[in-house]
Image: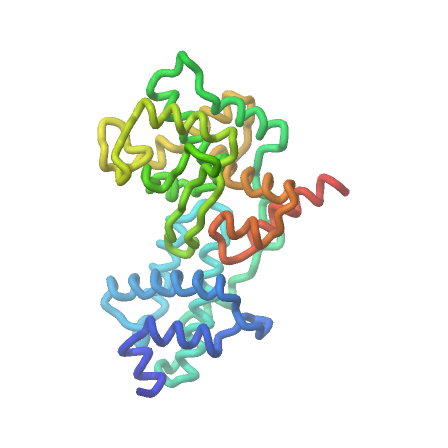
Length: 305
């Protein structure tokens, strides 16, 4: 089977073969294994989009790319570079498909020409050490807590203590978390481009989670934080955002972004301040690339210069 036919018959296999044997970035350096995992997840998402539009790798056009990039942008928070990363990836892919004879032209070329990494990316928002300590205090359970506040403290404790994304927290189940014993931890399954990982839970996060477990005992397979009045539907992003905003308001923190991302950035910054490397911290976040962590480390360097 020649390469062109492999891309038609088995695109996933063809993409993996290309990534591991030939593909390289703009500097001609081969991609790391973590980047390859991330790129495969991105390619899978793009391929699913083509299938829903009834086109293939050999036949999609600029209009299909436009709809795909619009969908990516609609699902991402403002200020992120997700669309740009997809443009770069699909441009590389199309140039390779032209090289192997599957396509006659590169429909991503126009998008790539206008794409560039932003020179002034907004600085990541995070809690400084004092605010981090204040929020760690806020999540400690109180005897007068009702069910709602008990849940809210546990939600914030897990986000701040383990650096989960909003989607990872929404999908977390009781079987994923160990609260008692000498090594409390949360297991995070692979999700899209984010890698499977196990994160140790710091001491400040476990009392709120234990209080929630006592109040809301559930089977191992049940959702950790189901939507109100349900057992099988995850808490939605609107309520999750409100929980985080209320907690940040309670400690007097105000910023343009009051989302769970602030707690994830704070978690990452705490790891860096404790001496962990970019690679170690990226792994704790489930990230194949170090880009996010490098930007967070820059905030530490800026404070010491």
